[in-house]
Length: 192
Image 1 (cartoon, rainbow, N blue to C red):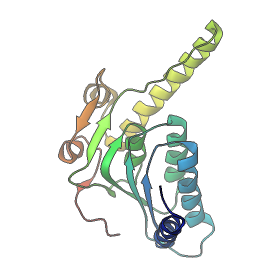
Image 2 (cartoon, one colour):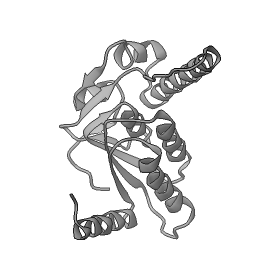
Image 3 (cartoon, helix red, strand yellow):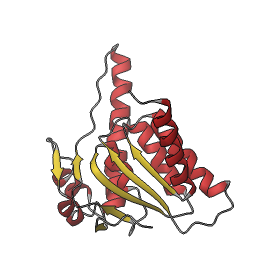
């Protein structure tokens, strides 16, 4: 269990990175974890007086809530400051969608990154009318995912369904991801 001193040191490091235009996201994609990143990007774009050439968002996430992921993606796309993304460790599912939302030409995977792409999953129960409404949201989310992959990779929907969203999970190396347009570079360098 972390001590008060280790938590304080972690907060100091996180603040120093944010002050330098960098954010490290390592965790589940949910509203609680995404909110600080959204606030950081908004602050850098609308509050701070510093003129940054780019923001650096490092991502190591096994995924999570698609709604939270698309909230961050929309904020990233609205940023007037380019958002460089660096994937490291594992980027999977909703974490992968966030990573590929980085500014084109500035999406970097470290050589040892594992990438997981798979179809959207969701469980639900309820009355028939509730299940029909849930199915509609499922269809809308799936369409958003395909459109996001198309915009970020340059692949068409058939290629996406074949290589990134087939019925089974797809694990890729950094080099395989590069060939599919998921990233722009494979490099250990994270310097902005």
